[in-house]
Amino acid sequence: MNDLQPIATAEQVGRPIVIAGPCSAESEEQIMTTARALAEYGIKIFRAGIWKPRTKPGGFEGIGEPGLEWLKRVKEETGMLVSTEVANKAHVEAALNAGIDMLWIGARTSANPFAVQEIANSLNGCDIPVMVKNPVNPDLELWIGAIERIYNAGIRRIAAIHRGFTVYGKHLYRNMPQWHIPIELHRRLPGLQIICDPSHMGGKRELIAPLSQQALDMGFDGLIIESHCDPDCALSDKSQQITPEVLNFILNTLVIRDNAQSTESLTLLRQQIDQIDNDLIEILAKRMRVSREIGQYKKDHSMQIVHTNRYDDILKSRVKLAEEMGMSGNFMKTVIEAIHEESVRQQIEVLNNRAK
Image (cartoon, rainbow, N blue to C red; front, side, top):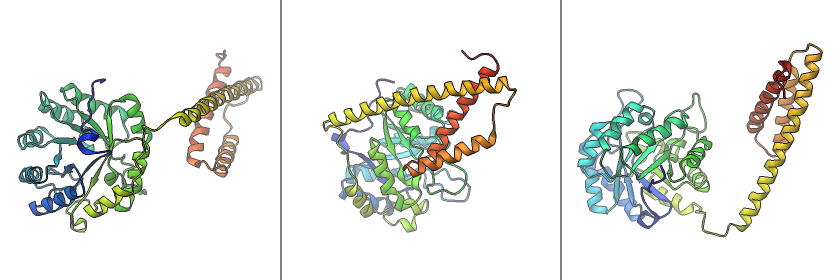
């Protein structure tokens, strides 16, 4: 996918890309009041959910096609581009007929290859920007697969939306960021723009600003933020929506990094990282040689490979030391677990006379 194109350029909408509007289109008055305020603050792309897939029946499931007429009015009166979510063929056809400028595929839909393919088939031959949210579960291949289906329909203006991943239990975030997954997506598809959705990721108004800054610091291309003229009265996801005024304040406080600045100092620092990584690999190779020697000793003395008490002591002491040195305990736990797994593998090879 070397010919991917941006859904919007800095010349068109500014930098970063900002897409804002209510979670749901609830009434014409609500849509127009919100849109006018956002337009005054310089927002170029308006968003609103027309069809709302809810976890359980009985909630507000969107206004449906009448809301598309409200989006047409937003476009006519404010000049903003308008966008909405589609989940099936009928949604796509209705949105295209209404002249919607951008579409996005939601997290529940992107997890279903049949649904994504139906949307892709409906888009075949169209030239419209499409944004694909990550699936609800942390499955990078499923996310890439959804993007590829849209690409194979002939769409070239494609972006990914990172809205976090669902995990069981209560956490600070509504959907866990797991930043390494969109980072890997960018490595795999470097021409793909990535938009952060801090509203769904955080699930709380107070988390929108810090999550937005984190995303921009990692080089994300833009933000899609839920903004409502009266968020406390919203019919869906009211706790994660903010007023246009608050949105404007947040955007004005964000630090936008300038990638065009000289990177000479950064290059020197990266060279240091490269050298340290090389040293780490050499040290790990040395550790594995010692592990093989331990494996030989255990083989000669008919000892079992794994001693849980020893491993438990190593895990606790290394995690404690890492925390004392300013690192994350969870990070060091993951590192030690990986090293221990490889050490056990090395010892088993010796035990089975396969060590080289």
